Amino acid sequence: MTGTSSLTSMFPISVESNWFLRLAAADVDLGPPDIMEAEGTTPTLILATHISFALLSVSLIVFVILTNFNFHLCNLLVLSLALWAAITWFISELAKDQQQQQEKETKEKSEEEEEPTKAKEQEPKKVENVATPKKTTASGVSTPTSAPKRQLRRKV
Image 1 (spheres, one colour):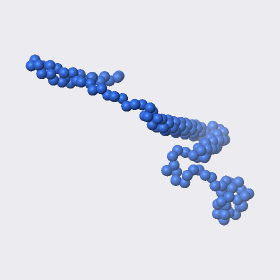
Image 2 (image 1 turned 180 degrees about the vertical axis):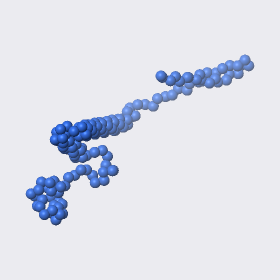
Image 3 (image 1 turned 45 degrees about the horizontal axis):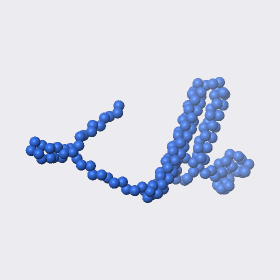
Image 4 (image 1 turned 90 degrees about the vertical axis):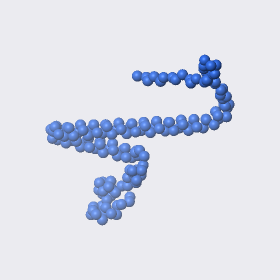
């Protein structure tokens, strides 16, 4: 264990005999050190979130029972459970979004790999020169007319 020498100098109790000091001295990896540049969340951070909300809920339940169902503590319990549910929902939505992005990227990569083979198989299409309709005037001179304008309709 690293970090035990600093704890033993601070506390006269040995670290090995006290479970709390052993827990405090344990090195826990909560993700990359520069959390602002990391994308998404780490599984360890999600687990720590669930554990902390579970312990908060247990402690609030104990306090609610000990205080004979105090109104304020019941409200705190409901709020903490609602917050835990909202965070869990948000984490699952992030996971779904990441999965969709990965599927989209793999689909685009596979399409890019297939494009060169399709381009070799296809021959260039010939474009025919379409003449514009001509209008003859009273003097017998023909002049090109403009193509009729199409009106775009909005779908409601």
